[in-house]
Image (tube, rainbow, N blue to C red; front, side):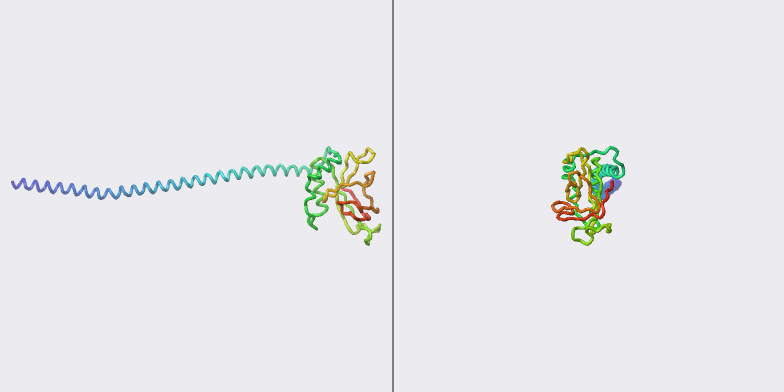
Length: 239
């Protein structure tokens, strides 16, 4: 009987130990599962954040690539224009075209050289003339520049053959056309004021200016001499 009691006691103690072990094991295991769930949520959020950042970087890359392609296209256009300008400035005209007067006047209408503002010692008559001559070369036209020094009637140097420069100097352009209004068959010389697009010729024979001569431009609108009589101290042409 006593032996049986002892066995029962040990059995109860054994069951209690097993139950306690299970309880302790569950208590130890449960916090680990909770921590694992927390880690899963953390890494899931980290993944979502990184994926969003990846998408943003991909979009930034696509935007930069589009900007690069646009800039590269602009570069190619500018380089092509540069090559064209370089050719105009450096290459001589090997087979120039003689325009008609109407072609020149139509071209001047659309050309914007005259739209620039005259600025003393910055952008002056020589700059206007050079620009127009260069642009005419793009048309394969042989436009040239004239230089004149002169004095208006009533000024100190007017009529003075010993004074080489006079009171003023001016640069403008001229071009030969094939359909002037004179009766001859020779090419006709027309002058152009680049600042106004005014076109004129010197008399019925379309001759050029002469030195030590008086010219009457009282009614010549669009020129530097409009409303004046003037004396030419010097005149030259840059062919």
